[in-house]
Amino acid sequence: MTVKLNLKNIKDKLKDNNLDLSLCDLKEVPVREIASVKKARNVNLSTNLLVSLPATFITLKQIVKLDLSRNMLTELPENFGEMTQLKYLDLYSNQISRLPLSLSELKNLRWLDLKENPLTEAVATVAGPCSNLNECQACALNIVNYLSTVKLLIEEEKLRRLNNTTGETEKEVITTATKKDTKKKKKRDSEKEYKTNSNKTEPLIQNKNLQDNNDNVLITRVLSYTGLLRG
Image 1 (cartoon, rainbow, N blue to C red):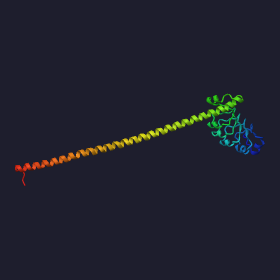
Image 2 (cartoon, rainbow, N blue to C red):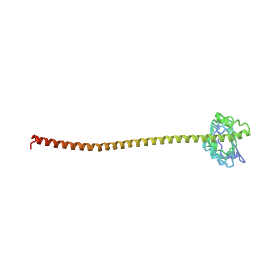
Image 3 (cartoon, helix red, strand yellow):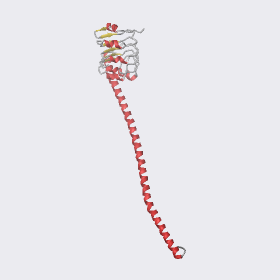
Image 4 (cartoon, helix red, strand yellow):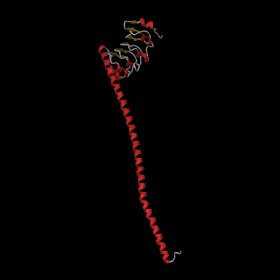
């Protein structure tokens, strides 16, 4: 049975700065109602039926201590790292296999429990056993640093790929421009050669025409002398 809490129910469960919503069979987080209770800095949502958190969950920025243990969460919102006031986060016994990179922004996080989650081998190794206070404190520091490194590596890889793509594009542009310049140069050389050859041929034609005229004059004179040419 799904339980829905109204604002009055929420306020009734508030004691000082502590809002205890554990064991309420909640399938959804009453974000709007919790947001209305500004004093709720320590929120306990443990032992419910939560499978996911809404994206609006991060509007609860006043939360410093958050207990989500013993639910069925499979992941956290990608923007979870916007809850920058968070110092204590209990995710014990859920179904979380991956953590959003935005957790790297939780610079105030001092305590984190990730036990009993199907984490990837790499993340589980970084998190450690989380079996006592010191290990949970180390988990918080190590996970934030680890995700910061992963985020940086991803950004560097994206930049490298962008540079490679830009480089290839520039090469294509240069190659195309070079081909065009070569083609233009060949055309100019061809035109120049044609003009040169034309200039060389013109005197030859003129000389040939002059020679033909001279020959005709000579033939006329010979025929005239031999009496073969009649007026």
